[in-house]
Image (cartoon, rainbow, N blue to C red; front, side):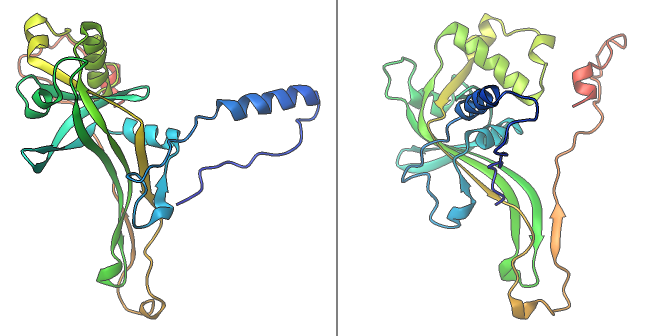
Length: 251
């Protein structure tokens, strides 16, 4: 994985007082977000060099998509559910319904023990094809979040969370749609999960073939994988006078 640390020059910009340059450097250094603290559960057993606890990297991976997988234990057996999420600062909001099992298990009060969970997000950036089947791989970026999820019960926080969920999927959409009414809010539930125990893992680059395989007559390399959106299709009952919003035209 490419080192995300950026080297900086040691001298001040010509014409800039040394004290100003020093002050700016100090401010920049102190404004760098602190990395997440590794734990026994967030240090991988394989390919440790691909792991990262960089806060900005974690946020960028989380912010680029909206589908996560939420894992928890139900009746002694593991369960993993795909669902939507949104990020607000150092907190994730996970969408659900009031009748869903994880929401009921998390409890409705702040004093409830909550639900121990593992939340994962993954981007597949490329298919890595090697000379040998064994060395085939994928380029990816992933985040694993461990913690205790709790149901959002405060009405104001719930509205903030729901707006964040909508805007996480389509930025700008919450302001261009009717807010939920009392009946809809009563049927909707959101889990809150703080970003405390977090790790990212990234693979980049081409295949890692064995030296003796390099002369084999098989194609090797990377097939890039990208997510794209098609042209929006209006609803059959949409008023023709309603134009396509700019935030969808540029999605």
